[in-house]
Image (cartoon, rainbow, N blue to C red):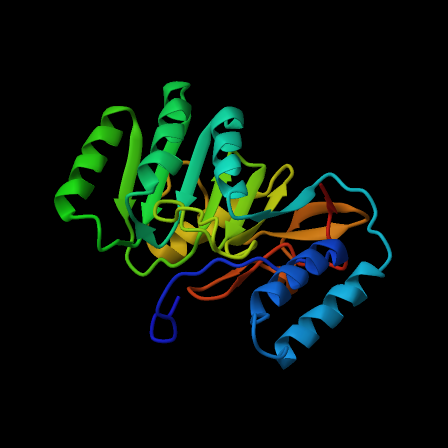
Length: 259
C-alpha cells in the first residue's frame, strides 16, 4: 500500500441488490430534501434510482442475507453481536467518545465474559475524552479481557463477529449517540450475514492499517455471487480492494437475499 495517495483507511461495501439499493437511495433522497427549498438534482436522481430498483426483478434466494441498518438499530446490532458471537467480535471506528461506554463497552464485557475475544479500534479521541479517561477505559477493559487501542489514520466504521457477520456503516461505534431529532437514516449501514465473510476483510484491513491480527492469514480472496450464493475465489478482477480509501467487496451480478 502506497500511503502517498491515501490519507485514511476506509471500508465501503458495494452491493447490486435492487431492494437494498432502493432503500438506501430513498433514505439518502430524504436527507437531501430541504424543508423550505426546492428539490435539488441529487434528490431527483436518487428518487429515480429508488423507483427503478423497486421495479427490478427479485433476486434468487441464497445462503447470505442483507439488511439496511439505521440510527438506533445500530445499538440493536451491538446487542445481537453480544448475544450471538461465539469466538470473536471486532468494532472499528474513527472516534472514541463518552457514548462508547454504554453503547459498546458494557455489551462487549458481557461477550468477553462468555469467552469471546473482543477488539475495539479507534483513530482518535473526541474532544470530550481526555487521555487520562482513555487510559482508564483501556485499563478497565483489559482487566476483563477486552483490547481497546488506537490505530492511526483509520476512518472505517464497521463491526464483525465470528466469520459470518459484517456491518459496514457511517455510525461511530465508540462515539455516536443516536439523536431522535435528526432525520431517519442520518446514520446508515449495511449488515451482511453468511458463512465465510469475515476472514478476508479482517486480514486486509489489518494489513492496510498495519496492525497485527492473530489467527488471521492474509490471502488474496474475494466474495463472488454465483447462482444465489456468495463464494470465495481468487479471480483477480473481483478481489477485495482495500488500500486505504475505498474498499469494494461483495461484488457480483446479483446480491444475496435480504431480511
